[in-house]
Length: 111
Image: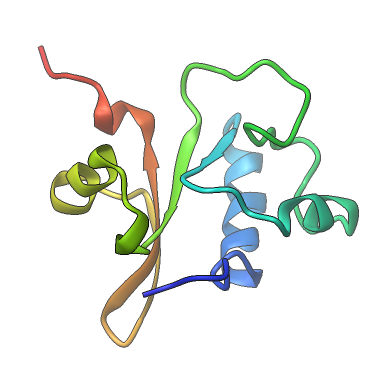
């Protein structure tokens, strides 16, 4: 449904800025996003929002998991999220979700 990180644009970055003002926010992307360093350099991706595998900061225990819906490269946990997860943010077009953001708590085993 998506391929070249086309959903990492104004709609997503706007959500990041708003969410970062509300709470501490850290992002973990399901797959590498080559444009993230450029978005950071251009000031589009706030420096106050750590990104796993991009910043030289120790990861927290609860980053938000950003998953573009590219089923051909899903890992098992992403199939589980696809079927059972409740995204906290979604970008969709014509009734199709293209990007979903989950809390990592979605993957934690229940009591």
